[in-house]
Length: 329
Image (cartoon, rainbow, N blue to C red; front, side, top):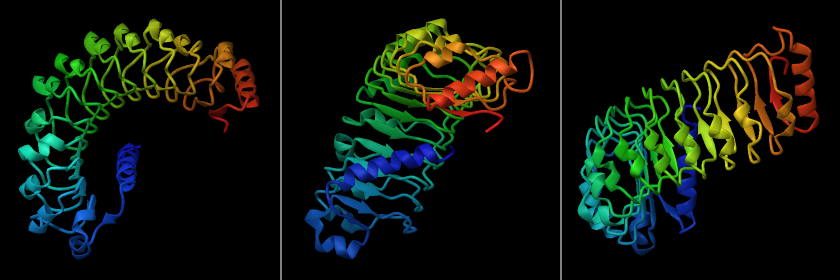
């Protein structure tokens, strides 16, 4: 999982831009076709400074500067007033200051695996930004000013040092994706109910003991990932989130299969691996769209008085075409 989600994010981005035309990775060739350069790939060039000729690409929309040696945002990009996306993954950035011209057009920025100690305040001035990826940095605090980025749809804080999500974060009304994998979060504020467009919630590998009931007010929520926390139960009202398609609660402290999941009309995938569950409910057979059930590392088939019934339910699910991953397969 470690890089899977990040790689998928990058592939989707590159594919969407590739529809505009050719990807140029040779500067000489690009300069011969400068008015046709929408996408420029200068990754893995060992650059510390950006070539000055970049300013000649007046139609440039996407630039990939990943795996270089930049310690600051390249100010030579200030002439590229149509720039929509910047990829500065795997560099040496400790802070960034984005030129005003770029802030007017910038829609996506990816800053994975740098050395950023704090959220880049320059992004508060971005007029159109929808996607921010800050995975694998050293950020410990989200500033309250983040609510100023009202265009934001996706934000990734994967593998940082965040312990608190401020109330102001929950005022990002356009947000569809929030990723806080591998942080130190222990609670979610009830204000999460205001993220009315949220579809994907990534909170695995934190310290969360309880999910708030207000989570159930998110009527567009499709994915919940809370693997490797300290949960013992789910909110009863979760049964009302009819949009839910996937839930991952593996490696928590569940003693019983959460019945809240049994009547969800669009639920397709459930992962309850590595808990302390000994009984499967028969109602699992009634989840209409279920196609994947992960059960490994529970007590279902080797302990307790329900082994035979559990086995029967698993076989009935498999007979329906559901993929079941348990101790015996």
